[in-house]
Amino acid sequence: MQLLDGADLGYGGAPVLRDVRLNVVVGERLALLGRSGSGKSTLLAALRPALLARGLRVALVPQDTSLVPQLSALRNVLMGRLDDHGALYNLRTLVRPRRVDRVGALAALERVGLGVEADRAVESLSGGQKQRVALARALFRKGQVILGDEPLSAVDPRQAEALAGTIATTFPTAVLALHDVGIARAFATRVVGLKAGTLLFDLPVGALDARRIEALYAG
Image (cartoon, rainbow, N blue to C red; front, side, top):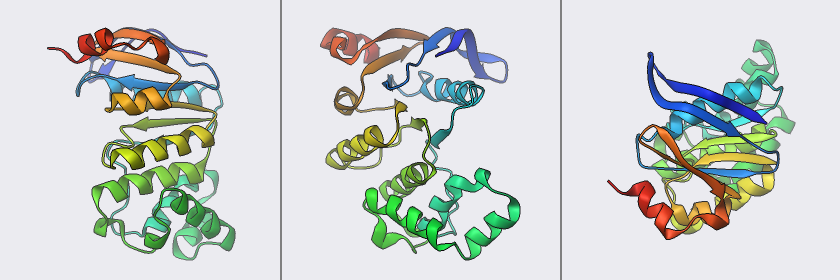
């Protein structure tokens, strides 16, 4: 899928990335690498409407998690499917979830190691736990593609590797912005490096060598 073809991407009329050309092949796991401010979030934000325009169901894990602090982990996970139903169904789901929805949301929390925290308010959870709730919400939503903006940055490396495996086995196609090169190597089939407003490289993960990594993060 050619999602972007010569696009200038940014906010408020100020491009962050220029002349972006990017295709995503079904079945790929794409990792976006680069220093903070390199444009990874900007690129992900542009990919979502491009994917939706092709009729694909997209699950999203935003960098700020976009959770409702006062609600329980379970109810935040249930919000992953709010756009599948009307207002009355959603209101009942948040007040008194149907059994099928509760079972599905609990299963998603179990997959990220938070089943025992299902009824805790999100505001009482740690940063890593909140990030896992956001991932559970995406798992509950399901879809052909997952977009994640640093979805594993607040969890320890061993847990992050396991969660990356969960993502890989759940979603046919994935695009994740990652800060850990080791996890990117283990997870991705393809890597894109962003630096100074450009795509510095776009290559199979096996071609990601020390020279390219150094060039990406230097300066």
